[in-house]
Each structure stands twice: as structure tokens, then as C-alpha cells.
Image (cartoon, rainbow, N blue to C red; front, side):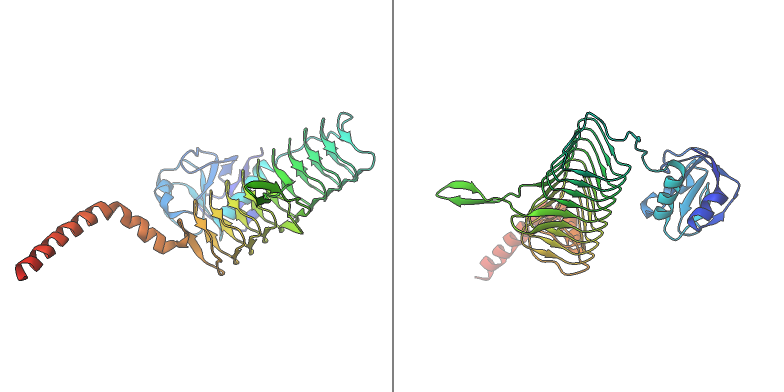
Length: 343
């Protein structure tokens, strides 16, 4: 890692400086753990107190604010922080190994230029792999799969037959793309499997977390649109369409035939019932349960999911319920006594 001055970093992110521009920075850290030579960021008001105690050499902020550290002022501190992390550390480097003789590659598969295919990876019949792809050990690319360019497929990830993967897609370890959807017809108490004859389409610049599962459609396609990021252990049901630039936080579960608009954010362990439509720019809080259509721009929380502000008021009332119940019983007794006296 190369040491850089605060002046260099401000120029890189288009920010301004309050403090000594010649301060040097060699690493990044949280405000709490930072030491001299580190840069950190501030974007959440609940951590404001740490601005006065942090040992960081510099803090990225959105406006001038009291701090022991020098300030790098940027319009979007978190985005500026991301740019600086990339500048200092870079993204993970993938070893250029070429195509291993220990990989199992079908004679009918087509492999693009400058690919790295590791030991014990499997590329099946008629699969098409784009240029500059990295496929780690144990990954399985099924028959007739199309994989775009500049993709990274981590160890033991599986892409089932006929699925279509765009370019610059990252699929983390143990993820499964295109396994059978959960489709059964129950007849006389027996659950009979419905063949899942659709596919999965993953568009460009999607990232899929470890152990996530994207089911193939019963008919047609399950689609994850461009720019969407899917966390670890997320399940996306058959026939669902996830819109562009969505964020599905780890352990989200989406049932079949759901439609998500663009820039939808689902908090951890949120559960989405099947056959509903969620509009654009919707936010759903962690552990929420959603069973009805949602119009654009809503912020929801709770089980069942409701307007987040209403849910917060309800949850804020819950600790008071025992006292409220006791007071109501006392009032009922007084009312009953008054009614008896009047009678």
C-alpha cells in the first residue's frame, strides 16, 4: 500500500480539506479503531461523538464539523470512502493461472480469451464462457450455460443448465443459480414434482453472495436485472423478477412470481410472499413480512409490514402494554362500581 497525502485523496474524490493537506494516510479504519495514519468517514449522526475522540489522521465528512482530525469534505462521504479504499487497497487480485489441465472442460464448450479456469472446475457441454473470466476450483458450469466476459465464479458455485449470465457478474462460493423452483402439485395427499423448464437470466454487473439460491422458473425466466447486489443466503423464488440496482441483504427470502421494481432495498431476513409486485425505490426493514402489493417509494417495517413510522410507534407502545392493561382494569372496576351505585 502506498502512502498518500490528504491533498492527493481530496483531489481523487473531488473534495476539499479543512486542516493540513500534507497529512499522510496509509490505511483506512473505523472512527473507533483508527490510529494516526488512518482515514475514516462520518455519515451517521449517532456516531458524532466519535469525531471528538477518534485518533484518525483524517475524517471524510459532508460538511465542516468539530473534530480532532483533519477533515476531507465531500458531497457523499461514504462514496468518497469507497473511492479511497479502492485507491489504497484495490480490489481482490485473481491469480493468472490460465486453464488447468485438471479442470473438466467439454470438447463442445467454448472458452473466451484470457480465462483462468482452476483445478477441478467443470465446464459442461456447449457452455460458452466469455473473455477474461475467472472460475475457481469446484465451480460447476452446466450444459448450454452462457457466461459473459469478466465474470468471477468462486469455489463450489453452481450454474445449472441453460442459464444466461451477463458480464462482470460475481458469484460467490456455494451459490446456486438455476436449481429447480419449489413447484409441486398435491394430489390425494402426495406432492408431485412439476418439471421446472424455465431458466435464470442474470444481467450485467450483478453480485450474488455466498450460498444464495436463485431458482429457475417453472415456465419462462427468473430474472435478476443489471446492477443488483444479492447478499449471502438469499433465496429468490421461481419466476421472480428483481429490478435494476436492488439490494437484497443477507437471508432475504422471496417467494415465486414476485416483481421488484428498480432500487428496491430489502433488509435482512425480510420475507416476501409470492405473486405480489413491489414498486420502485421501496425500502423494507429487517425481519419484515410482506404479503401485499406495494406502490413506489414506500418505507415499510414489521410483521405484517406497514408504514415504518407507524410501526415504530406501535413497537414503542409495546413495553407500556402491561401498565396500560392494569390501568384499564382499574378503570373498568371503577366504572362498574359507579354504574352499580347509580342503579
